[in-house]
Image (cartoon, rainbow, N blue to C red; front, top):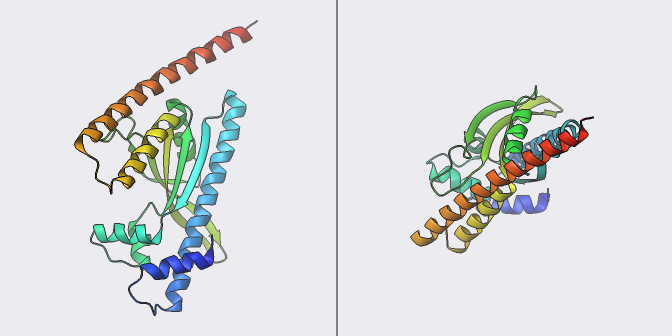
Length: 228
């Protein structure tokens, strides 16, 4: 974390230029907590990925990305919900300040990773949203978990929420391009484009199903060859 840049971003979003030093310290502590939580979850995911490969001869995770929500995004989200704009309010009301995106190879891997992570002794699942079984109207598909993970400070452990989005490569391609399109068009996509996006999402869903079937067939064939 670039501390100087973090303070600069924080100050730029505040109305009071003479903000107290204590509030800056509180903000930096919050950033530290969420950064530490991301490190904890990433480590768990990497270990689970390696362990799964030993058992199943297959890595379920293609890649992992993470981010801390920007100060401006936090403030905009609080305002959109009609909530108080403060560090305490952000901590209490926003569960996606720390975010991790896990991109998997196949649909079965998505659910396997979600289950393995959820079953960790020190992980508490706060919320689950399955947008694969029940896609959003625009075609978005992903498995969302909001978990609480303990981080250990000099004063003792505290639980920190982390949003984990788990999806296939195909789902990630669609979501990334859809996000880019919305950004380029000021978050307003023409109706015709919305229909095309939904069609693309449906096409990629069929591709995911076909690739999963091919993987199963290849795995079964490989197992048959191993038999004496």
